[in-house]
Image (cartoon, rainbow over all chains, first blue to last red; front, side, top):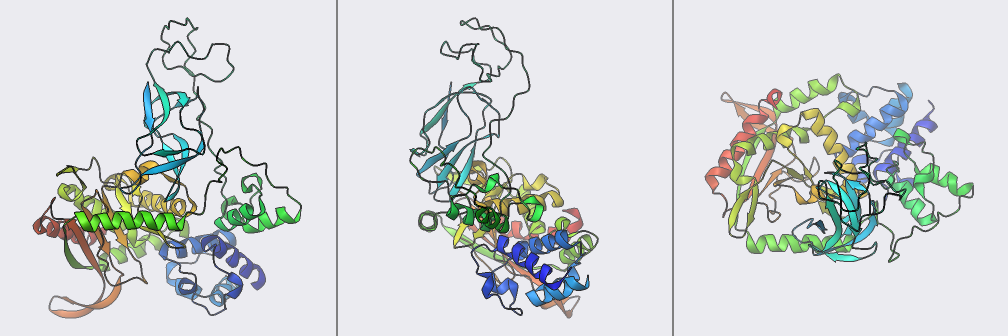
Length: 79
Length: 406
């Protein structure tokens, strides 16, 4: 999948988890959990949705690579 | 005939507004069926019935505000002889009979056949963002085809519908006119409800407080191994270990699991844990998962995920609000080191789990780094004393050292 497709998917998923947030203001390096106030259930749901959309395994030890939008795109384009 | 009454879905609730009936006279009802949607200060709640029978009359109309204890409907209990006013046999509406009973109206005994459940309001998955946009545009999101995660109707689907000229759905015939606030809740109303409950708690309940530090190393190691070989939707969070340990410990300390009402303690009929959930936008609810002591960890994780999703999208059930026998509050990784709760009346205890963080600990005389969590108990001194509270915390701590037994 391309960067653009992954970004789109990630933002779509995040808009479902944080519907009141204005995602157009989200910067590449923003700590998603901080900026969008995601708790551990929200983050796990985010990971699960990314897995379902892309097929990437995303083991727990890789979670820290997906804390920013930049990280998510980099991780999933490689996968 | 049984009067089906407006349930009290929280210590602070005075009345609710009937937003939608999901059954009509003549429909069969069974234990646990959702028969109406009621708007409360905590948002739209699916109200369940715990009788078996047939709806005889809907006394409250959609749009009516009914006080707690007021009559919502009349139910003819299964096994009661049919009243003379029962609909004639020629009615096409399904009148499922309980075991055929000879009646004065001489109706032919209807065959006992499987009955379709009462019509549910659409349970098509719609993302909260999609629902909000759809509400603004006057489009019914449940009519759209979903292309989002799990086939849910997504924001993009609603945008597409608008772009392709979807017309606003015909207004639902709801007497009183106000739409059901699915996916949203009345924040001001909810804050009033929380204020009433918390003030009452502090006025009436003599709280005592205990806390202990729990070494979470064993639990987290066990969880990491469990999660390593599973896809994300089967992985579990530490929260379920904390809940299960608490439930098992409460089985041994029943005086901390139940209610203080009318000057005495009434033990809960099961361990139904109210899990405090903070709602985006500022609300708070603590709905129950029933019989946590008897549920496997994976099932508990699935139930927790479902509960949190429904709390945020306005699909909680009346029994979930009425039944908690104790509450657990956990502020999560970015919350405080410890949280000492305020008991939610008429319960007698609330447990608080602080964030798990690596800190110095002593094992066999050596200082080591361990993931530690502060566990607190706030309890009603009328129902229990510090000794019992201490034993409860000790039991929870011990169970978290042996996660494979949970």
